[in-house]
Amino acid sequence: MTVLKIAPSQEPAVDLSLTYDAVVVGSGAAGGMAAHVLTSQGMKVLLLEAGKKIDINQELRSMEWPYDHPRRGEMAPGSHAIRHNEYTIRQPPYAKKTAFKHVYSYVGGWGGSDYVKNILVDEKDHPYTGTRYAWVRARLLGGKTNIWGRLALRLSDYDFKGKTHDGYGEDWPISYADLAPYYDKVDLYLGISGYKENLPHLPDSLFQRHNKLTASELMLRKGVAKMGRTVTPYRAGVTTDGVKNKYRSKCFGRGACGRRPGGCDIHAAFDSPTGLIYPAMDTGNLTLRTNSIAHEVLVDRNTGKARGVSFVDSQNHRTYEAKAKIVILAASTLESARLLLLSKSRQYPNGIGNSSGHVGHNFCEHVMGPGATGLVKDLVGRESTLDDGRPGGFYVPRFRNLQDKQPGFIRGYGFEGSGGFGIFPDGAFDAPGFGGQFKKTVREHAGAFISMGGFGEVLPRYENYMDLDPVVKDRWGIPVLRFHYQFSDNEKKMCEDMAASAREMLEQAGVEVIGVDRDILTEGWSIHELGTARMGTDPKTSVLNQFQQSHDVRNLLVVDGSSHVSASCQNPTWTIMALAWRSCEHLADEFKRGNV
Ligand SMILES: Cc1cc2nc3c(=O)[nH]c(=O)nc-3n(C[C@H](O)[C@H](O)[C@H](O)COP(=O)(O)OP(=O)(O)OC[C@H]3O[C@@H](n4cnc5c(N)ncnc54)[C@H](O)[C@@H]3O)c2cc1C
Ligand code: SF4
Image 1: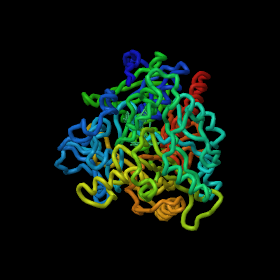
Image 2: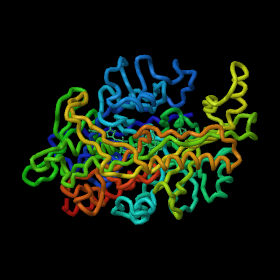
Image 3: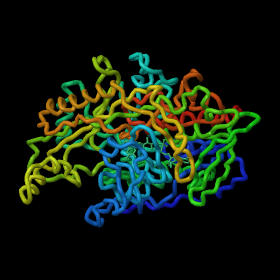
Image 4: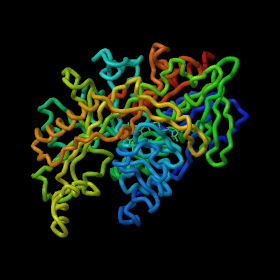
């Protein structure tokens, strides 16, 4: 098997005496997309990334078998991954007063993952304070896209026009028709696999070949169809038929992306460096500076416009200035809010772009935890098959509060799940027995389990917010975020329904239910943080306009999930990229006309 090893073209040297057309902060899904769109329109862009550029293929070691690793993939002694109970019982900063040399978020699994030790931030260097929150951060070129779960979904007008539908919150300043052409562009440029279902609440993408459902998943699909619900193959941000991009290959179906937080060393799964940044470098218009932690948007005293970004070099701790005609923040939802709040000046005493006082507020995400596991008795004892040689299992789209009205809660949730054989037989934990008999039971039952877990919409509320901690700073002396955030009754009621409906669906499909999870995971668990600088038409109650442009500062944009008005229950990354594409295309037009 040939693993792609094409180096990106030589990038132009960083020249901080230049004034670039645009400076983009952050190189994940949002920043990568901004760099791609602007450079393809001929603009000269400087991309500042706080993390390193690492040899990601060497880091991921996608083809390594568990037994080839000295600790079966677990982190070295001295490192610690924060456990569920720590998040639940303690308050952040979670790495405070710990004896461990390195502390990471939960996402690598309880033993931590050796494959992400250089991808996730060390919580010791990057503390945060306030209410409990499981914050997962990846600081490197490409950000979280290096290890994301690949579920790539569109939003619909049930989401964009949520207020019109049920009266809560605010409608987005755009509708599905505005964004659909940009979802199409993202699909075609990056590749997405999936199966058309023609659902009004989960619009289809321009799909490439879909993954096959396993025997138990097909059984579930058939069973729940009678309830008017859908089990569809995982809509994966993965190219299964290939795309025109020399840095990426089509999917070989090895399932390595499903190992802990996965990643894909042939880049069939989308990641920002190979999907967006390296092709942008090939235009000759992109300059990249890694190890560059932006901490302030600089302002022209005369015009009040943004004039660049001040950043700290993470290695030598020196401060530099990058000058640009346009500043684009794409540091991820919470980090972009932090940057806006950090950028205080005479003109903007509450932080830049914050005349509304809404920066850091209206935070939303997805609530997780409830779900169910079942056993398909007919599949016990069958010969093993290669079920996990694919980039994902199945997805159950939202079915609540569409035509119906649930008594206890508004909005909805979807389920991610999978059934069949996997490299590690997850069901082993539920199998009875001891010694040889236990091993036999695990082998016989390994392919017969099916499980699913919910992702529910968390309502945006002004009272859920983040501000700057007045005392605590990170390793580079930059004030950290302080959380003031918790789930409301709506999320709690929704989770009760999630657990009940997961059970109900398995039963309806004739699957024996062997476990139902009812507990809600700590805030932040979904890694789908959104809001904090929402778009809107009213500058008094929103931060950005429909093109993610600051109401207060015309040449300042925030193109990541912080602009989202509500969370919907669909995973956000495809929407983040479609929105960034739309905004940056508009920006390039305005720039050419001299309107910015
Ligand atoms: C394990 C995992 C599974 C996931 N699964 C899914 C999924 O299935 N579907 C889905 O839609 N989403 C999923 N996500 C979420 C997805 O990764 C994010 O939605 C997406 O990466 C957001 O893009 P972003 O550009 O806003 O942020 P990021 O990808 O986090 O990129 C932000 C970048 O900005 C940099 N940065 C931060 N602060 C600064 C600063 N001050 N100066 C300079 N640079 C800075 C960071 O280092 C980073 O590189 C998952 C995430 C993880 C970790
Ligand atoms: S299944 Fe496809 S996307 Fe996942 S690691 Fe293998 S090649 Fe990459």
